[in-house]
Amino acid sequence: MNALATAVAAEANAVPKALFDWKPLALLAAVVLLALPLIGSPSTWLTLTAAGVAMGMIVFIIASGLTLVFGLMDVLNFGHGVFIALGAFVATSVIGGASGWAEGSSAAQIAIVFAAMFAAMAVAAAVGWAFERVIVRPVYGLHLKQILITMGGMIVGEEIIKVVWGPQQVPLPLPEALRGSYLLGDAAIERYRVLAMVIGAVVFAAMAWTLARTKIGLLIRAGVQDREMVESLGYRIRRLFVGVFVAGSALAGLGGVLWGLYQQNVTPQIGAQVNVLLFIVIIIGGLGSTLGCFIGALLVGLMANYTGFLAPKVALFSNIGLMVAVLLWRPQGLYPVTNR
Amino acid sequence: MTAPILELSAVQTHIGAYHILHGVDLQVPAGQVTMLLGRNGAGKTTTLRTIMGLWPASGGELRFQGHSIKGLATPDIAAKGIAYVPEAMGIFTDLTVQENMVLAARAARHAGELDRQRLDWIFSLFPALKKFWLYPAGKLSGGQKQMLAVARAIVEPRALILIDEPSKGLAPSIIQNLIMAFNELKRQQTTILLVEQNFHMARSLGDRVAVMDNGRVVHAGAMRELADDDAMQQRLLGLSLGVHQ
Image (cartoon, rainbow over all chains, first blue to last red):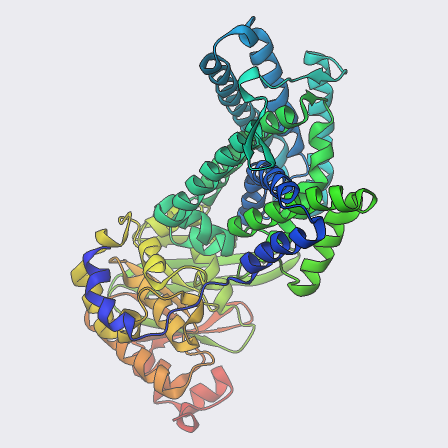
């Protein structure tokens, strides 16, 4: 704590602190706990919970950039899915190109997976930069055109992916080192899901630290609320937006690798398939809210796994039902961003 | 009148299909408080926003410290030393008071780099900000938010401060507090262009006055002349300062 904060601490302590809104976190805990008696078996419940959290983490990684892009510049980017597909296909090339990787040591296999992640992020970031300049920039402030042109951009992107990698489904098998499960009593938790959880937690922690502790983060949070005022204070919000767009694209590329490995195959339509899920997550969380996006993604991941086990026919609609329920409770989402 | 720090000549502004400013001529002398008065819809807020580049001027010329600022982007205009306090205050309500101040201080990367001496001066003007330093700005009262909005504008030395209707919707005691703070800024030779509907505040603070009507400045002169002339007030503003004590 800086000297000034210390100096005013005594006085500030006399002021009642604003309470953190715990209700969305309580909702998450309630969903997890309520699932236990419904599922019955604690080991099955633990396995499903771990799978749901892993799925939620991957969805969060992909959606976090999308929610910031919307929050910061009011841009509805329906083309976000193309970065997911791009990341996943780059991973197929990197992993496929490392011939004999499956026979290498565990460390080598994991190193190749991480190399694929970094390559996917780099390519998605570069394409994201071009996407912002060519497709998004001409339609700032024009929502209908944003939807049309970004969807068009995604279709074009998918076709380019088909030209480069072919139209067929491409396998993206997990390396030996990430197959198998950890056993906790009778519960089996897949190694790869643990890795996805760890990566998701690291991304969330890095993002939370950047937003809370750095001036760039402060500018992003302020820009989400009132970008005109940020500009009036002398900051170029457009540059900030390009940076966020590029970072969001890179995260979508990373998410694409994780999603592809999760499904163990990749199609050019992988992004379009996830797109609806992404918008459900950022709407549930509150447009522009990173914490809301995180909680929303976990809720979506858990609901998909619990309902998939309890009532497979309902699972198809569970996320829509979740969104309706959350919006009936909080029409602006779990953590609404003020001024929006 | 001292040399103008800001000069507007025949400034025109269109917002979409609407022609709002029809040739504004305005001079803001350095080190003084210039009041911008006029009826609702006269173009006062549009004038401030045009100076900041938030709405681009479609004609005329804007010169700040002798250099044209027409066509510059808002961040470039702010970087020249112009601070803006909008009518809606522009407080980042999800950020703490401290974070709002750090953002306003472009040279500071974090609270520890804020100019402590200047901050103490600001706390002497607005003690509530010290009390609520680590508190989310959205939880402040309307008056406290206005204090924060003004404090942000003065957290670093600025050549010119544009303030849009700071007394709007505030209790008389808070308005009095703001008048005291603005008087302190006057003593420090801060140049202010202040849009205000509260005539008591306008008369207390203003050195110069410009009255707008229908997108033009229809009168400019010393505030005292207008304050002392009931007939002029009636003609220009449709009412008399004498009845707004």
